[in-house]
Length: 158
Image (tube, rainbow, N blue to C red; front, side, top):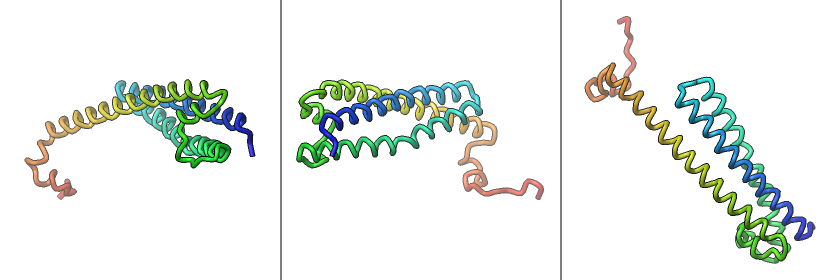
């Protein structure tokens, strides 16, 4: 079994990786937003692919952190569900301050990802509504045409 100090060092490393990942997510969301604003489909596809790649790595990071927390729970003789980064920082005799600081940084970075995600959601909703308004202006509103509102395909050659 690993020593408590070794587990705490490993947890610090895991949290640092999570923090770096959150910062990368903010940058990738900014790239995606810039591609949408500039109407660059190629850049949007690349930004989306990069974002998906980053998100695919999250379960691996989460699994590593979970293994370390289970090890700490065994070392301290408590149930895993009792451990959070805050409680680890409090329980750790030495080195807990660094985990507490990283926790604060991770919390701030996660909040920034949430803000960027909400901004992207609002932007894509606005974009979708503008496209819908243009289509409605050109073809008429859906409620005005039973063919458009029903989603029926029409053979234009008939």
